[in-house]
Length: 179
Image (tube, rainbow, N blue to C red; front, side, top):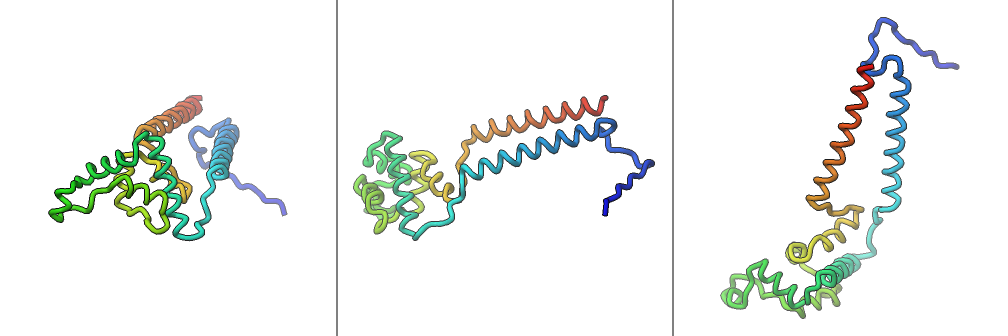
């Protein structure tokens, strides 16, 4: 059975859709279709990982991310340990007074990286490593769910691009309304 369209001739049409309404609707439809395809492409190229084999695999991934960040930073493991100690305010004197944990050493960092199964990285170190080295380790963690850390500068540029796109659409809609 054919579907019958009913249109009330007394009902006013939507602004901007007089005359060339079908073309505007087709244009909006094409835009949405293109955006949807772009999103599908992004999802295909950045798949969400289904899971991990066990908790040791997670420890290994974080250790590998730490090793890569250390390599990219150019810091030695001893220098990294010293930076972490400065971040936490750790010294031998404060440790002897019971006011902080034992200061981190380069060999502690080596053990975290090489033997992540029996010596996993404590989460508070992740905060310090991120502060000293950057977002590589954090990206490894959020990457497990398909995420990625975006810097403030990248967020600002993305917001500007979105504003520019919206301004362009508003100009187009205004031109359509003025016709």
